[in-house]
Image 1 (cartoon, rainbow, N blue to C red):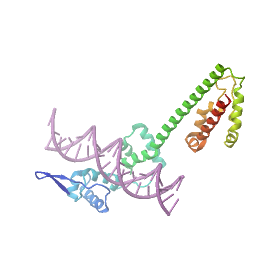
Image 2: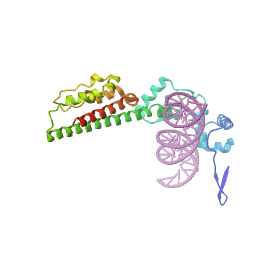
Image 3: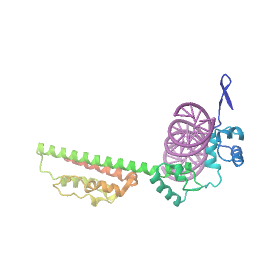
Image 4: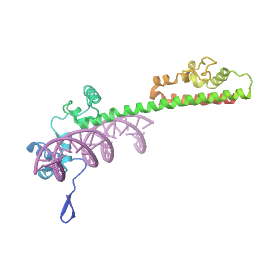
Length: 237
DNA sequence: AAAGAGACCAACCGCTCCTTT
DNA sequence: GAAAGGAGCGGTTGGTCTCTT
């Protein structure tokens, strides 16, 4: 298929998309007769309306004898991990150490199996930052509340009582999640006096719970708990 | 059972390097 | 030595299949 582009010049329109069994047969026959290489002449010689690039890729990644099919073995996966650590995205170099596997196959495998882990750890890091930020905001808010109390000279007020009230209101919730015992106030005079232990240990707790724990509801619980607690504090003041 | 999301894979694209003239 | 064409490589895209809700 060719298109006239002026003064008798022709622009070659190569076929694109998935290869048909007929095309595969033609290419295989051509390569078995003439060997690999001279890909640009394949189109003319083999009667294929494909670019040389396309022919080469089809041969290398699909038709070449000795190619392995199916999932990569754990051993192969291990080799990929090790070699990628050395060479990075040098897929063709890595492929040389995995007979029967193509660079394209390894590249695809890496993308689907390892890129998502990379992405997940980035997401986890982002969440940690959010939690730290939230904790800081809570501390700041509590500090403001304390300052307000001092300015207004309110009645003798024990933050411990406030918290125990809040705890009562969220008792059912906390017991359901089995972490009630974590809601123990530290030193009443410390800066953490208004923060449940759960929040003090949030970063390490996050590490234990991980992404799944957060996405499956614990994170929401923490949020609800915060809201309930803050409401109680505000209401008491 | 249907819709949406995610995984997988084949193929294309653009770039660089190498070889030939 | 320079230009042109070919080959190879890594990144990206798009289609299909499978799993989950």
